Image (cartoon, rainbow, N blue to C red):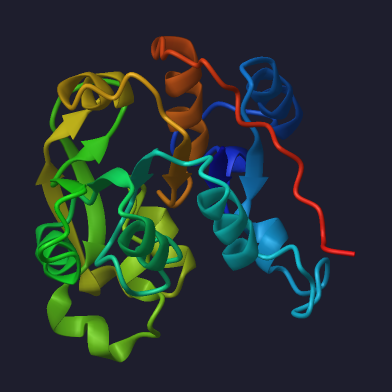
Length: 231
Protein backbone atom coordinates (compact mmCIF):
# COMPACT_ATOMS: atom_id res chain seq x y z
CA UNK A 1 0.00 0.00 0.00
CA UNK A 2 1.09 3.54 -0.72
CA UNK A 3 -0.43 6.62 0.84
CA UNK A 4 0.70 9.73 -0.98
CA UNK A 5 0.47 13.32 0.17
CA UNK A 6 -1.42 16.13 -1.45
CA UNK A 7 0.88 17.62 -4.08
CA UNK A 8 2.50 14.34 -4.90
CA UNK A 9 3.53 13.01 -8.25
CA UNK A 10 2.14 15.89 -10.26
CA UNK A 11 4.54 18.43 -8.72
CA UNK A 12 7.32 19.22 -11.23
CA UNK A 13 8.91 22.07 -9.27
CA UNK A 14 11.46 19.80 -7.57
CA UNK A 15 12.49 17.42 -10.33
CA UNK A 16 11.74 19.48 -13.41
CA UNK A 17 10.29 16.34 -14.96
CA UNK A 18 6.59 15.75 -15.53
CA UNK A 19 5.63 12.47 -13.87
CA UNK A 20 2.14 11.62 -14.97
CA UNK A 21 -0.25 10.07 -12.45
CA UNK A 22 -1.68 7.39 -14.72
CA UNK A 23 1.57 5.54 -15.54
CA UNK A 24 2.51 5.56 -11.85
CA UNK A 25 -0.82 3.99 -10.94
CA UNK A 26 -0.40 1.34 -13.64
CA UNK A 27 3.18 0.53 -12.68
CA UNK A 28 2.29 0.19 -9.01
CA UNK A 29 -0.53 -2.17 -9.96
CA UNK A 30 1.90 -4.37 -11.85
CA UNK A 31 4.05 -4.61 -8.73
CA UNK A 32 1.08 -5.65 -6.61
CA UNK A 33 0.68 -2.35 -4.75
CA UNK A 34 -1.92 0.38 -4.57
CA UNK A 35 -1.50 4.13 -4.58
CA UNK A 36 -4.06 6.08 -2.58
CA UNK A 37 -3.86 9.86 -2.73
CA UNK A 38 -4.47 11.51 0.62
CA UNK A 39 -5.94 14.48 -1.25
CA UNK A 40 -8.66 12.23 -2.65
CA UNK A 41 -9.51 10.88 0.77
CA UNK A 42 -9.72 14.16 2.61
CA UNK A 43 -11.29 16.29 -0.10
CA UNK A 44 -14.85 16.82 1.07
CA UNK A 45 -15.98 17.78 -2.43
CA UNK A 46 -15.33 14.20 -3.52
CA UNK A 47 -15.93 12.15 -0.39
CA UNK A 48 -18.23 13.35 2.38
CA UNK A 49 -17.22 13.38 6.03
CA UNK A 50 -19.68 10.60 6.71
CA UNK A 51 -18.19 8.30 4.11
CA UNK A 52 -16.63 5.02 5.13
CA UNK A 53 -13.76 5.76 2.77
CA UNK A 54 -11.53 8.04 4.81
CA UNK A 55 -7.95 7.65 5.84
CA UNK A 56 -8.68 6.54 9.41
CA UNK A 57 -11.02 3.75 8.30
CA UNK A 58 -8.65 2.62 5.55
CA UNK A 59 -5.80 2.36 8.05
CA UNK A 60 -8.01 0.64 10.61
CA UNK A 61 -9.06 -1.89 7.96
CA UNK A 62 -5.59 -2.82 6.78
CA UNK A 63 -4.00 -2.86 10.25
CA UNK A 64 -6.81 -4.85 11.88
CA UNK A 65 -6.76 -7.30 8.96
CA UNK A 66 -3.09 -8.02 9.77
CA UNK A 67 -2.12 -6.81 6.31
CA UNK A 68 0.53 -4.47 7.70
CA UNK A 69 3.56 -5.91 9.45
CA UNK A 70 6.17 -3.40 8.25
CA UNK A 71 5.85 0.36 7.71
CA UNK A 72 8.08 3.15 6.45
CA UNK A 73 6.88 6.70 7.01
CA UNK A 74 8.84 9.37 5.15
CA UNK A 75 8.21 12.89 6.39
CA UNK A 76 7.11 11.99 9.91
CA UNK A 77 7.47 15.52 11.30
CA UNK A 78 6.81 15.37 15.09
CA UNK A 79 4.69 12.19 14.93
CA UNK A 80 1.67 13.96 16.32
CA UNK A 81 0.62 17.01 14.31
CA UNK A 82 -1.78 15.83 11.57
CA UNK A 83 -0.30 12.34 11.94
CA UNK A 84 -2.62 9.50 10.97
CA UNK A 85 -0.21 6.65 11.71
CA UNK A 86 0.61 7.36 15.34
CA UNK A 87 -2.43 5.62 16.79
CA UNK A 88 -2.02 2.48 14.68
CA UNK A 89 1.71 2.05 15.16
CA UNK A 90 1.20 2.23 18.93
CA UNK A 91 -1.93 0.11 19.00
CA UNK A 92 -0.68 -2.72 16.76
CA UNK A 93 3.03 -2.40 17.67
CA UNK A 94 3.93 -2.61 14.00
CA UNK A 95 7.61 -2.59 13.08
CA UNK A 96 8.21 0.82 11.53
CA UNK A 97 10.93 3.17 10.32
CA UNK A 98 10.05 6.84 10.80
CA UNK A 99 12.07 9.34 8.79
CA UNK A 100 12.28 13.05 9.62
CA UNK A 101 15.16 15.28 8.42
CA UNK A 102 14.58 18.42 10.54
CA UNK A 103 16.35 17.95 13.88
CA UNK A 104 13.83 19.89 16.01
CA UNK A 105 10.89 17.89 14.72
CA UNK A 106 12.89 14.66 14.89
CA UNK A 107 13.52 15.16 18.61
CA UNK A 108 9.79 15.68 19.20
CA UNK A 109 9.06 12.59 17.10
CA UNK A 110 11.21 10.42 19.37
CA UNK A 111 9.48 11.82 22.46
CA UNK A 112 6.04 11.08 21.02
CA UNK A 113 7.02 7.43 20.54
CA UNK A 114 8.95 7.11 23.79
CA UNK A 115 9.28 3.49 25.00
CA UNK A 116 7.84 2.00 21.79
CA UNK A 117 10.44 -0.59 20.88
CA UNK A 118 8.83 -1.34 17.50
CA UNK A 119 9.84 2.08 16.15
CA UNK A 120 13.12 2.90 14.39
CA UNK A 121 14.02 6.57 13.92
CA UNK A 122 16.12 8.13 11.16
CA UNK A 123 17.09 11.82 11.14
CA UNK A 124 17.69 11.98 7.38
CA UNK A 125 16.00 12.90 4.12
CA UNK A 126 15.17 10.30 1.47
CA UNK A 127 16.59 11.18 -1.92
CA UNK A 128 17.88 9.63 -5.14
CA UNK A 129 21.38 9.28 -3.66
CA UNK A 130 23.19 9.53 -0.32
CA UNK A 131 24.77 12.95 -0.83
CA UNK A 132 24.01 15.76 1.60
CA UNK A 133 21.25 18.04 0.41
CA UNK A 134 19.64 21.33 1.39
CA UNK A 135 16.12 21.64 2.79
CA UNK A 136 14.11 24.79 3.33
CA UNK A 137 12.01 25.20 6.45
CA UNK A 138 10.54 27.93 8.63
CA UNK A 139 12.76 29.44 11.31
CA UNK A 140 11.36 28.27 14.66
CA UNK A 141 11.45 31.83 15.93
CA UNK A 142 8.72 32.77 13.45
CA UNK A 143 6.47 29.70 13.53
CA UNK A 144 3.97 31.40 15.84
CA UNK A 145 3.16 33.84 13.03
CA UNK A 146 1.74 31.05 10.86
CA UNK A 147 -1.00 28.43 10.79
CA UNK A 148 -0.51 25.02 12.35
CA UNK A 149 0.15 23.34 8.99
CA UNK A 150 3.27 25.41 8.25
CA UNK A 151 5.73 23.19 10.22
CA UNK A 152 4.84 20.48 7.70
CA UNK A 153 5.80 22.37 4.54
CA UNK A 154 9.55 21.75 4.74
CA UNK A 155 10.75 21.12 1.20
CA UNK A 156 13.73 20.77 -1.14
CA UNK A 157 12.17 23.69 -3.02
CA UNK A 158 12.11 27.12 -1.39
CA UNK A 159 9.25 28.20 -3.66
CA UNK A 160 7.04 25.59 -2.02
CA UNK A 161 7.19 27.52 1.26
CA UNK A 162 6.64 30.84 -0.49
CA UNK A 163 3.51 29.39 -2.14
CA UNK A 164 2.19 28.61 1.34
CA UNK A 165 2.59 32.25 2.36
CA UNK A 166 5.85 31.98 4.30
CA UNK A 167 7.85 35.19 4.10
CA UNK A 168 11.27 34.89 2.49
CA UNK A 169 13.05 36.30 5.54
CA UNK A 170 11.47 33.62 7.75
CA UNK A 171 12.88 30.72 5.72
CA UNK A 172 16.12 29.01 6.68
CA UNK A 173 18.28 26.61 4.69
CA UNK A 174 19.40 23.37 6.34
CA UNK A 175 21.99 20.88 5.16
CA UNK A 176 20.81 17.34 5.91
CA UNK A 177 22.08 13.81 5.45
CA UNK A 178 20.36 11.68 2.84
CA UNK A 179 19.75 8.04 2.06
CA UNK A 180 18.02 6.24 -0.76
CA UNK A 181 14.93 4.21 0.07
CA UNK A 182 16.85 1.08 -0.91
CA UNK A 183 19.70 1.87 1.52
CA UNK A 184 17.23 2.56 4.30
CA UNK A 185 15.43 -0.76 3.89
CA UNK A 186 18.69 -2.68 3.62
CA UNK A 187 20.13 -1.03 6.75
CA UNK A 188 17.28 -2.38 8.91
CA UNK A 189 16.80 -5.66 7.06
CA UNK A 190 13.33 -4.87 5.79
CA UNK A 191 12.91 -7.72 3.31
CA UNK A 192 9.23 -6.88 2.93
CA UNK A 193 7.35 -3.61 3.09
CA UNK A 194 3.59 -3.46 3.53
CA UNK A 195 2.94 0.26 3.92
CA UNK A 196 4.94 3.17 2.51
CA UNK A 197 3.46 6.41 3.86
CA UNK A 198 4.91 9.54 2.27
CA UNK A 199 4.42 13.24 2.96
CA UNK A 200 7.37 15.08 1.43
CA UNK A 201 5.77 18.19 -0.05
CA UNK A 202 6.08 17.42 -3.73
CA UNK A 203 8.87 14.82 -3.75
CA UNK A 204 6.61 11.80 -3.38
CA UNK A 205 6.74 10.73 -7.03
CA UNK A 206 10.54 10.56 -7.00
CA UNK A 207 10.54 8.34 -3.91
CA UNK A 208 7.86 6.03 -5.32
CA UNK A 209 9.74 5.71 -8.61
CA UNK A 210 13.00 4.94 -6.80
CA UNK A 211 11.26 2.37 -4.65
CA UNK A 212 9.76 0.56 -7.62
CA UNK A 213 12.94 0.69 -9.69
CA UNK A 214 15.53 -0.08 -7.02
CA UNK A 215 13.97 -2.16 -4.24
CA UNK A 216 13.79 -5.90 -4.75
CA UNK A 217 11.62 -7.00 -1.85
CA UNK A 218 10.20 -10.41 -1.10
CA UNK A 219 6.45 -10.36 -1.62
CA UNK A 220 5.01 -13.72 -0.69
CA UNK A 221 1.68 -11.93 -0.44
CA UNK A 222 0.62 -8.97 -2.52
CA UNK A 223 -1.65 -6.80 -0.44
CA UNK A 224 -4.18 -5.60 -2.99
CA UNK A 225 -7.36 -6.10 -1.00
CA UNK A 226 -10.36 -4.02 -2.02
CA UNK A 227 -11.85 -1.74 0.62
CA UNK A 228 -15.59 -2.12 0.88
CA UNK A 229 -18.15 -0.35 3.01
CA UNK A 230 -20.09 -2.54 5.41
CA UNK A 231 -23.57 -3.35 4.15
